[in-house]
Length: 110
Image 1 (cartoon, rainbow, N blue to C red):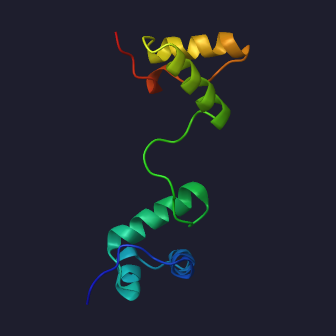
Image 2 (image 1 turned 180 degrees about the horizontal axis):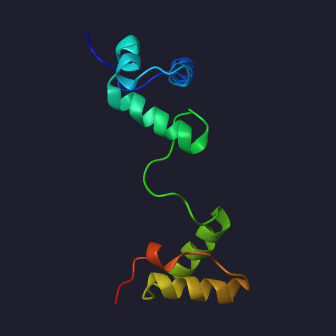
Image 3 (image 1 turned 60 degrees about the vertical axis):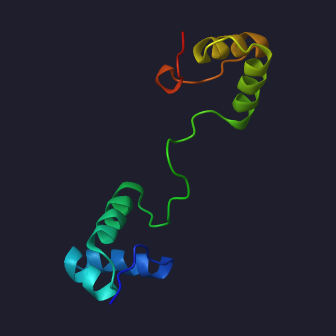
């Protein structure tokens, strides 16, 4: 039998119900014919967010808004020699509002 790497919505909620009833990960994985790691990740996600919907995004979480992205892009196009950190400062001065980009998320080049 082949093993699946993901579950549909109904099966995810059924898995959570089995966990709450006291079943073990390996028993749930055998019954649903999925890998144990799928069950483990699903349970961790449920405990963290109280939800079992699939995560749509990959990679880093988005920090800036769409308007901030547009402002930063305009400033970067106008002044191509500036670094990422100075672009945020210039964008804040141009727009009279703070553009929030944490320093650890901006690539700094010399």
